[in-house]
Image (cartoon, rainbow, N blue to C red):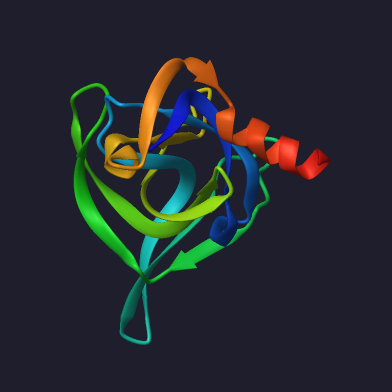
Length: 147
């Protein structure tokens, strides 16, 4: 198993996000990403969701509207203990040079410093978390790029 620190930088190729900050949170079961303008829409008899990632104040905000048909609606307990319905999308994350499948709940995280939270469900049987370390995947990526 790979060791990951409490903060790192990852890529989400299907979401057009490269070198974006992630926070590893072993207290959270699900992973989540900051988004806004989320709406469920039906077109031609098929449901999908539309959303924008991050928000205009984030340096990597790109105004892009994402449309996804492969999603679930789940009840998720927030860090404050409130249970809320959230849309969960299936996408890919690249850390340590490897692409993994990941489920991300779409969440309003504008009050959080880091837009993406990586929870236990993703970490399980893939990573050991060392909270004293940071950016291990990003350092590896930078090292390979400069080699």
